[in-house]
Amino acid sequence: MKPRNPYTPENRAETNYYRLGGSAFYMMKRYLRNMKELLETHKYRLEENHREEKRNFPQYPQLIDEVYERQYKELDQHFVRILLNSSFIASFSIFEVMFKEVCHLAASKYSQKVDLDFSSGIIEHCKGYIVKDLRIDISDLKHYWKDLIYYRDLRNCFVHHGGTIEKNPEKIVTFFRALNYIKVKKIRKKNHYKLVLTDKQFIVEFLDTASEFLANILLKLPKGKRKSLPHSLGAQARAKSAGA
Image (cartoon, rainbow, N blue to C red; front, side):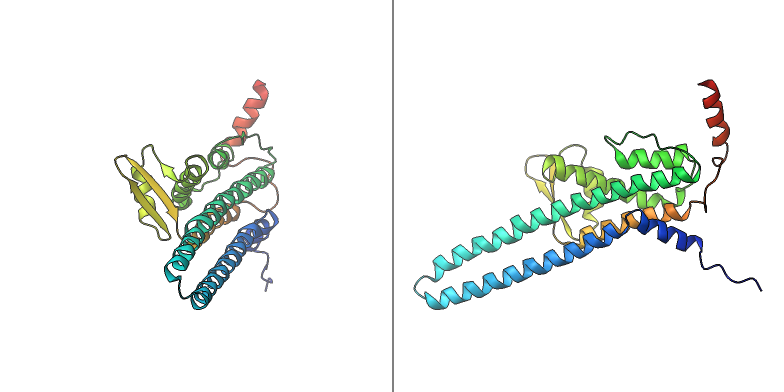
């Protein structure tokens, strides 16, 4: 009986996933967990100090409460919001960087060189290269891609508009209202909305979506290298070279 090959397509995809930087997704999750623990510890100490000062200065309970309420609010609304927003932006950058690496690996499988403009619209350029240039069928990953486009819009919203959606908000607002760990607030007298992350789990779910999307693309890549492109693309490439 022929021995079973332990190096399956799944194992190859997993090896490539980590070789291209997939561990960064895990490291971001660990960072978020550590930051949450630090913030919870800081809040616990604030509460202890609050109680102690009320015991030591019973004649000023209202003043002490007002001082600490400001600190609680600053912690919850300022530091936590900065942490979550910046972590989400960094997480999206991890996705962009690894998507580019996936493109380079996919190109090498067909003895091609990646020639892409990565100055803007990175994930769209990467997907276009995978689908149009290399003709790799990822139609079964549409549900991932649809969500990732909304996450991309949110990333741009945080980077350029401080979390406010001003133009054509209906679709993105509908999408994020259906999710947990994010608040959608209507701005009065304007057709604008404010998006506020409320928990690290929102970012964890994005990281899971992005990493699963990339892992599934890697699973579609052939073993070793191929000298010709899939389908009729090889003939197109040869015709293009001849025309040059």
